[in-house]
Length: 225
Image (cartoon, rainbow, N blue to C red; front, side, top):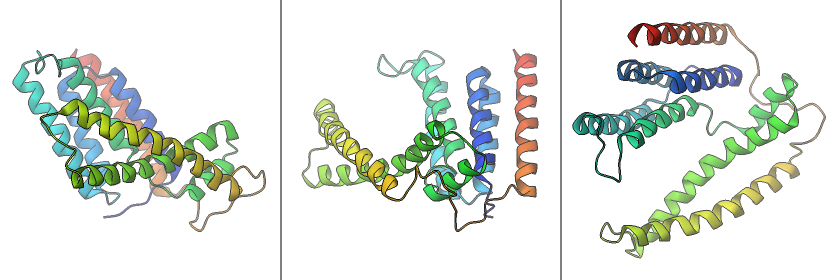
């Protein structure tokens, strides 16, 4: 199953997920929301990524159960486990948006007459994160070849990883901005896209379902607590 939703639909799901993650306090509701997000990703063809997210979230859930709300030593307090799990859920909601073609995103923003102060930063962000992820892979591969990654020296390994990432990320940001400008991203004229930009019936259905599910969770949160 590979259903393609409009960018506006995906953006609404991200906003609603962020509101739920910020409000929900019951672990049961959080875990069920994790299942809902998994279904949302699977129907869009992100099955492999969904399994990866579930495995990572499952690991943090197990740590929370084992710690019984006390955290895992001073390095992993319960608040850290609490926050990481919710951050991962927001990343899951944003997964369908990450890596989208910048041209499609720009075309949608132009169609809804969004100001450039909002459209341009969002477009750069969507292009920046996948690039940074590939840069992380290159850095880790280089460190493994040089045998600089070691659990025995975690601080040194962190230094060897973060320092090149910071410099390469700064360089990539400048290159992406220059590339976007050379392609006319700030051109006030009409922007087109190879894919048809239209809010279709499935988008309306997804928006209604997302709003209803969000309202249901708000009601359940008051009932459970």
